Image 1 (cartoon, rainbow, N blue to C red):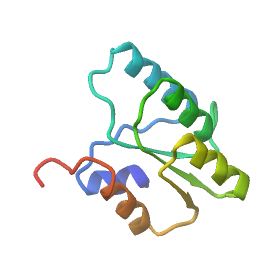
Image 2 (tube, rainbow, N blue to C red; image 1 turned 180 degrees about the vertical axis):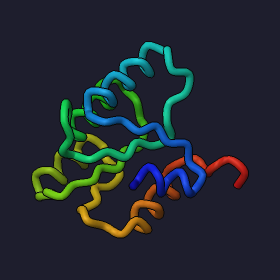
Image 3 (cartoon, rainbow, N blue to C red; image 1 turned 135 degrees about the vertical axis):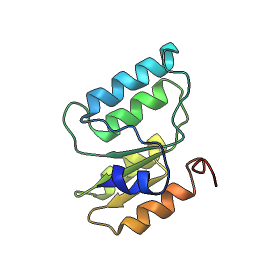
Length: 115
């Protein structure tokens, strides 16, 4: 649903099924086998393989400064503090209106082509 909403706004979206796939993408970025880093990552905190917080930690350990928006249905103070310490730009509590995510993305991602 989120991928479709972002595509409708003209963003190029790469969707992954789990945290391990995102981690592999980060490794490829660091290795230079992917030519251009994404302008933004939107991730759930709870997902198979690696959590969104582990993915964010891997990004920072790789010294990649890609903005990250995290989503959670289980946001507590400790999770929010850890996300902030790792540099998450936002933590959205599910369910949230799609407009809230669209607004956050608009302020961070490169504008869609043709705008």
